[in-house]
Length: 345
Image 1 (cartoon, helix red, strand yellow):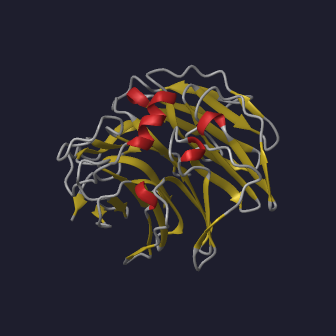
Image 2 (cartoon, one colour):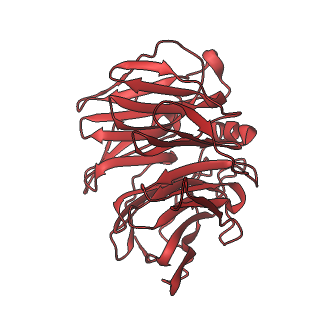
């Protein structure tokens, strides 16, 4: 996945159309992976929400020319929020359905207040791959230029104080792209990126932590200060807040990209339909491999909705840009009853 992660930074995405290939809501009485949205013009790169009935998914066409994508689910149907522009959004996060941030290519940053978008793009050509909001006036954004080293915009770490975004200095410049950021607060914050990089902020002090990763780390997510996961390439790492450990999980189909957890369990997703769930049980629980369950799309982002449901966002986010071509975006859900697949303009 190291080579694929590098390709991600070089591509530009196209956005979702307002139509999909709906499969309909299913209720088999048994939890399974089900397709919620498919056949979208844009790849979906992130899914996140405040509850199972307040969900956002973002993405784009990575240079194929279609509009940027942000869809919202209100428990009944999906709405195309039509953020405008052709930049691809790589990640989204917020504090409520009226305080949502999305970041992406060419330093693009937008904020959704529940009714309107406002542009907060910063002066950088770097792709912004991750965003995490601790509060409306406390937001962190990361990014960079994969394989660009110190000669290209890298080590990008920005902070929003309610008025503006400003660079947040680190103890040293490594010339590495940062892919994601997550924390329990701004006083306990993690940033992961190229070459297994893990920065940890405690209070106001940043420390470069020892990482057992063998490649790029694309996502970091936790359920608490003592249950944190970081994934990328062939690595699934966990931390108790002090030490990172590589979990004995076999990653196939090209690599793992996304991780999320809800305290009771966790989910990891990746290329070729890779999907595994951590089921609570004795000891550390058991990882269940759902890769053979459809869909078999490449997945980038995952989200545990804290109600027992797991979500996976993906599509074609690897191929070289071809103007007008579809990115075959897909959104999948693990649960008993799939959310509605209806998308309104």
